[in-house]
Amino acid sequence: MDELFFQLTFFLYLIATAGFVMHLVSLRKGVEKIATYILASGFCLHSLGIVLRWISEGHAPLVSFHDTFSFLAWAITLAYLLFQAGHNVKALSAFVSPVITIMMALGLMHPRQVIPLPPALKSYWLPVHATICLVSYALLTLAFCIAIMYLVQEHQIKKKRLGAIVRRLPSLETLDTMSERCLKIGFPLLTLGIITGSIWAETAWGSYWSWDPKETWSLITWFLYAALLHQRLTVGWRGRKSAYMTIIGYLTLLFTFIGVTYLLPGAHSYAL
Image (cartoon, rainbow, N blue to C red; front, side):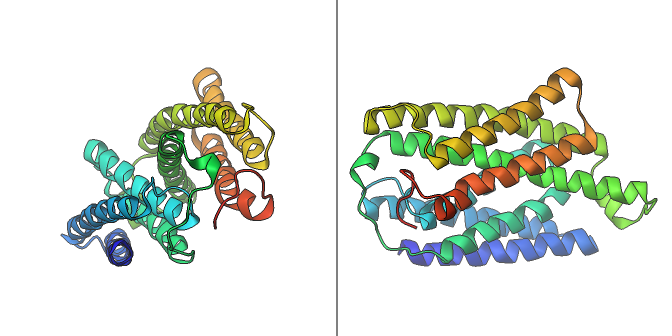
């Protein structure tokens, strides 16, 4: 049953993405609102599917790549819906929803069978650590999408192409402020995720830090975001520099999340 819900959710997210992109291109009245309803409906179905998956597995569905991609898509959707409720930036949907759909598609590409937990993962730290990390990833995804929007808007203004795209995207100042807000929440959660992971590692393997590839790249990612926030808060970095650094940080985050498991397997490599 949870597999059916996952597939239906993917279908709804795909339709919502098409609607958001159509709205950005054509500004057809009502399209964005309908797409938002479809996305929200998909989110509710997705939530139910995750609960059913949790029940069927007997533990938090946060181990396999299918489950983690699914949960990350769910977390990004939740972060986006909450962010929209406070900011109402309609153009953001056309940049975030494709990422959600891609994460769901990646989940579809991986095995969906229930996987027995390895001994090291039989801990209450699994839902705590994994949830904190994936929620931080979701917020940093929003910052990444906003950075892309910033560079697109800046390019249009610089080239004096003051057409439809410029009118549909928020001002550069607004985009920069939005990105900073996502970073200010996402980075502390990323930090907390690393801390809870270290505590869990000590209980599971007897060491807080073993320089496993996943741990090493998590630290590299943390330093990049720490440097970005330091530059923003103390040096006053704004605009293009911050946007580029946000994108670099997110690409490093994706490599830590996905690439390390495939290319640099270690203690954190479980079922794919």
